[in-house]
Image 1 (cartoon, helix red, strand yellow):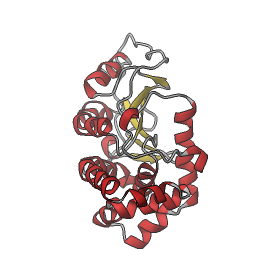
Image 2 (cartoon, one colour; image 1 turned 120 degrees about the vertical axis):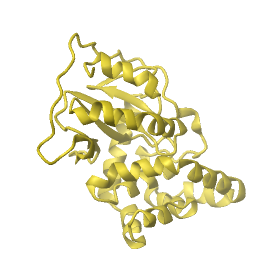
Image 3 (cartoon, helix red, strand yellow; image 1 turned 90 degrees about the vertical axis):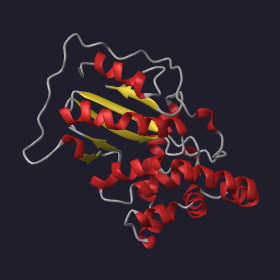
Image 4 (cartoon, helix red, strand yellow; image 1 turned 45 degrees about the vertical axis):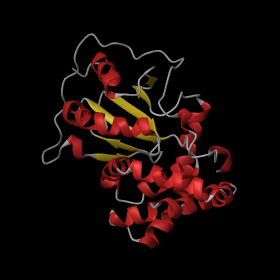
Length: 249
């Protein structure tokens, strides 16, 4: 897994914020796509599906408009999108069954991202996005602890970055408070530590990350609509018109 996860400094935020892309914008739909009612007793905004690739999809898994975010839980721009964009995305688009939202890991901050990604999968499938939202809501606290760790104990940071990815992730999880956070989400410490060493989950996350790296995605967040990168789109204000152009209107 080492080749798929660059254990670079977690403070290297240059990759945060997406940017330009060589990919073309999604094709504009000439007609609005009809809503798709959820099954009786269910709501699309509460429907979570785990894919064969071990990523997670919120909403109608057969939605005609498939939105994918390649993101990092330590990326401030991703955190800003979560704060500003997830509620309108849920209420206006996902709830209609026309749009699904899939989160994929792009580990631009190395081991801390890997730790958060492993622990986010340490809950039942239906709770994945709830914990993801909480990770973003608490992002500033984690980043503050990371900054303090780098400034106060650079020797430990250097030691952790030299370890194999799973061991480095476990070390950072302890150092910046991810284990305690997961306990607050109802995950016992023993289970959280087992998740950090889950080789199968780690390999799946590494594979998704490698796809992002190998396809030269411009950074985090990067959004795709029906398989095409939406260029220059890192905010809800920029993304919503692209969804509407695809027929979600």
